[in-house]
Length: 638
Image (cartoon, rainbow, N blue to C red; front, top):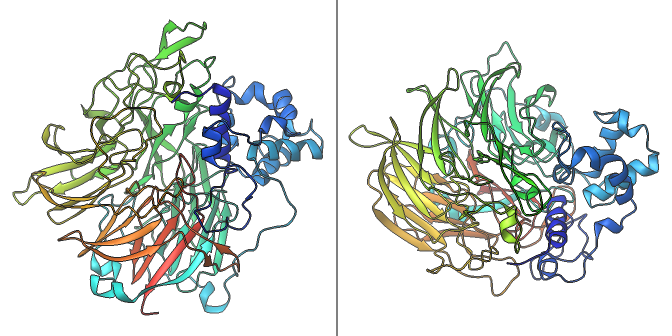
């Protein structure tokens, strides 16, 4: 793929800010989305598009803001993160928030214009329709309905037992959509819902966190985070009656939060990393009063600018006291601080080692006192032993117990997608992160095995004591957007593996084998194949439609739920891989706020299942996938 820097920056900036809308064929864009904007395919083909630099807020940004927000000030969020924030949040920051001093030098009109320039959307005084507020009994939290230890941040196995799920394969025929929530103006929905106290908790692209009545969907409370929430909502399972019932999450500008689950009141918020490109993409893991927050970054995209000094970010995990947000320890995946290693042909300094972000939710091994994480690639040359690895840290102090690198010499950044960009590392990829959360498994003989998936399409069984490779099995072709992306699931002796594998990876690479999108089952002890279910291709030429499974999968006894990139949510039989039930999330639905919206590609979290309800978010309007903006709640026989 060849693309000039300006076009690539335009594509990335618009995609991140949510101004690109590509509705699935036959479906209207959701409420608040503009149908007049050009879609991603037109931009990538260098056709005409709205150039944000022509907007009236552009000169305001470049005169007042750019000197701090394009890498010059260590603690200032990079421009790309500002582009992820809704315009209203930017105005608030400039008038009464952390940027009040800088905003005082601007007129009200200038503040509005710069917010619209960054957000890529107009700041309107007309609020979007909202779902109804709860009244009477629906507004009451049921304290007997305690949080269950399921879902990212508590149990990364992807399995929900029947006592919690309340759903079986026999119930699937009567499973119907009960209610749907629209996330206004969004093009993606990436927060895994949590269920407790008779409520559904979920985050959204504009930073709103919702507490919704499980039965009806009415709003009990909302909270406004500083930026997009793409992590799961983690409910504190051991909350005492003496203190508040807490929930935790992270946002894309590297804040971790604790809220009162019954009121939505902010208990604390902590900036967990000062690098301007740092972010929280993986769900924080909670255990015994401590929150373990993974740190990743988008510095990988900043390197697209040949003048950017790539790269200084190091992946990390931060341990916080759950009651106060106080930092206990911080452990880096790259042990050595980056230093200058060379100068590019354009005179730009290159720093290394760097990268090895932690994209997924950490996994707690309480018996061993360890925390397991997977790492991504290095961002600059030379690659070191921290990339594409599984690492174990001691829960007590963050000291590294062991590390096992699964792919050697993987250094990559977005500069590699451009012709002759000097910021592309010498290794040029292949960008095959260990991004999915690690699943611990005990074999019939009592041996502890770590089940690991990688973007190259390979699954591993590692020894939990030292990380030795016990077995490996290739299932997919892999690639930058291929292989295992967000998460597997394990039940008893079976491991269920979703494979994304795009026919066109949009990465300019040539592959020696065809893609193998679909769902696979392995013997968790040996890695031997049990069955395979190639993904049906129902895309029929729709733009940004792919049959594979990038999103995490969720298993209940007898059933695996998998959201595909084609916008279909499917339920598979655990013994055969046969499709038992399916739902087309592309089709328009009437939402609680009275609007019509729809889902799109599934990417990120797996569905949540509790008390007979199936709950899923749909929409992944990034990186050549179909946008959408709904929370879908299904129930049996209701």
